[in-house]
Length: 212
Image (cartoon, rainbow, N blue to C red):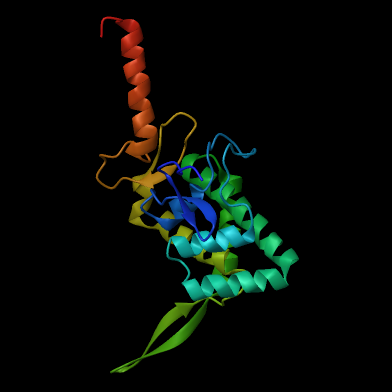
């Protein structure tokens, strides 16, 4: 088997893009190529509910055991799993619109509905401490879990200080998103879009001045 491009990695038999967004929500949006619309992508790395679950484990949202249990659940309820997967892809497209287009009010409404449903699935559980009880939020480990996790994390991103640091890669046909809190980052990855831009710039200079 030939080596994978530098921006991809083989995870449990599935090829996935390496995280470059500095936020799992942005890395979720970066699981397809060429964000030029809602049509088919040149490369789509989330192709089934199983790949979504494996990706969730890869970026640290699910434990290895949790990945295994959800894949087992999906195998027993394939129609429900397919429905949850399609909902996740719709959410991905709507959220991308929200983060890149100030006029995307209909997409914002769709994102808000998914976040509200996820919040309704959340449970407050007691957490014993030396001084009594504290509490922690918990989501049921069911087929809703991957999308629910991403929806609630998206709410944190949209309402938190990181929202102003979201940047879009200007690479040709890319559109991947990443956090740039210091204002110094231009590309999703220097190894991919950054390097391609350097090659194109060098070719343009050489064409303009053949003596180089």
